[in-house]
Amino acid sequence: MEEDQLLELDARHAWHPYSATLDPDPVYLVRRAQGCVLELTDGRRLIDGMASWWCVIHGYKHPRLNAAAKAQLDDMAHVMFGGLTHAPAMGLVERLVRLTPEPLTRVFLCDSGSVAVEIALKMAMQYWQARGEPDKTRFLALRRGYHGDTYHAMSVCDPVTGMHRLFSGSLPQQLFAPAPAPAFGAPCADADIAEFAQLFKTHGQELAAVILEPIVQGAGGMRFYSAEYLARVRALCDQHQVLLIADEIATGFGRTGRLFACEHAGISPDIMTLGKALTGGYLTSAATLTTASLAETISAGDPGVFMHGPTFMGNPLASAIANASIDLLLEGDWQANIQRIESRLRAGLAPCRDLPGVAEVRVLGAIGVVEMREPVAMRSIQRCFVDQGVWVRPFGRLVYLMPPFVISDEQLERLCAAMQAVLAA
Ligand SMILES: *Cc1c(COP(=O)(O)O)cnc(C)c1O
Image 1 (cartoon, rainbow, N blue to C red):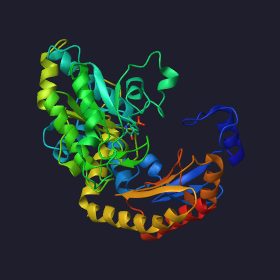
Image 2 (image 1 turned 120 degrees about the horizontal axis):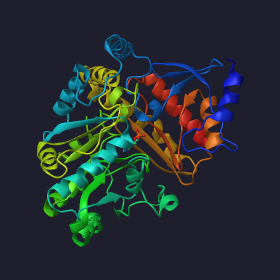
Image 3 (image 1 turned 30 degrees about the vertical axis):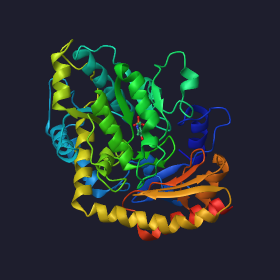
């Protein structure tokens, strides 16, 4: 099919993320991708600053991941996980237990981030039911948080920028603490956590769990907050018998400079969700981890099982690629590499501070954010970035880079230069 036929089909029949079908935003036709470069059908080559929504950590078409996929295809692409098990999923379970904080030893594999969050919330609810505390059904979340687009996941997203207004009649009503004020690296004073602590006092009896993104609030605002704040949340949860769910779907696998962002605060959650970079961006796969004690309590309660079981859980192909992706990450000096990206982003984005309209520039690990005072005009800014030869997709007031970890110094320089040029214009 020709380029214009494909674009015509797209305009007529496809529905893109968060998009309208009337007067839709333009889309770019990509033919192939390799390393950190997206190649459009018209021959233009774009340096990728997004890692395809943060998951393609090793770059596109990586020989090791391709080989893992091909080898797995020769054995089996998929079998059900009900009553069957296999080496790829056991390889993944073993790696996740070994790498995540100590008490997390039970792994529920599933198919996407939002589903991993649903599973985490259901685990917390079933846990309290099994403990004979059926009133503990509500969740406490942070403003500016993002946890996915499915129903219960939506209910714990930021109530203003999320989708609460649209579905308010049918969404469960959760509790929200202010977005953490102290920045990453800063201490957390009593006043910074006072409102959060107050919610525990007034609602502790009905709280099943706190759910948050540790250290980095991603799609809800790209905010980096104090590790001390996170440590104090953990302490409050222990004090009031409330579970802590750490949603590491965006932060997991090294993005913030630690393998998991919880490590910045030296804490471990009762439940952890993983997704995005899990398969190096090859296939959709996710996981919800919990402790042996929580799993045993659920299993000993009524109805004696955990009530979830997606068709594609433990998918062998996705698991085999995830195993190769994790091995690839850990074999190199990934920490030094993230530091390299961090210092390049710091240097490369610093000049943006002086541009008109820029509110703040912040960098943590392989995440570089330029926050504008006003929302950017998506259509025109997207075209400007493509004209500069880079793929950067802002949202709201946030123009950011989250490149693949294999990005070269020269490619990083080009991404940062494009940010400067586009934001200056
Ligand atoms: C992306 C994301 C999700 C949702 O994952 P999907 O795979 O898009 O369903 C949930 N939580 C966080 C923190 C995320 O960044």
